Image (cartoon, rainbow, N blue to C red; front, side, top):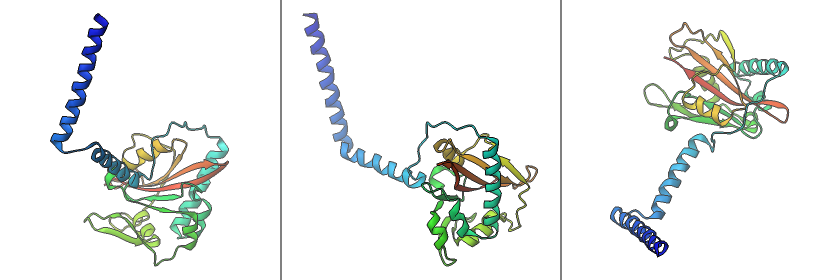
Length: 230
């Protein structure tokens, strides 16, 4: 008898809860389908910014001395190719599946991140007439430049249009990263970060950050990140 009474009480509460949920939906005018569409839209907006990235459970592999030396050489080679606008040769180091992403606003909130992605083939076919949207300048105007001008004006000059003197090379020094850098590190834990930086004594420190990852025993570049501290 007690079990029967308990069962009736549980069923009563279940029916009452379902009725309350349905009543709430009818009051707000929001159906389950509409809620699903809103959630899907939110997911799609995030995916368009993060390009399907998510926090990975993979663990970083220990680096050998040979790998470290190779990466430092690869970073220097990449730095010189960028500086001299030898973009076609970047195709050889571009990650075959992740491609190469230029991050112009590394310290921005997620919704303000603007990125331009190149495949290896795009580097080989790049023309100076091709312009891309890189983000916004300090006045809120769109930065629409070709690759040559973006690299010259934003990667190798500061906001005063002076040449940047990258005096330090930092090997995988990860501290309290925020913004896009934090997202990239969480999504690609096996990646190695190499920074070209001005000295810390300068108030307008800027970093040019390269992210490499190994695939099939070969190291590739998949992100070039501009980080500025004003």
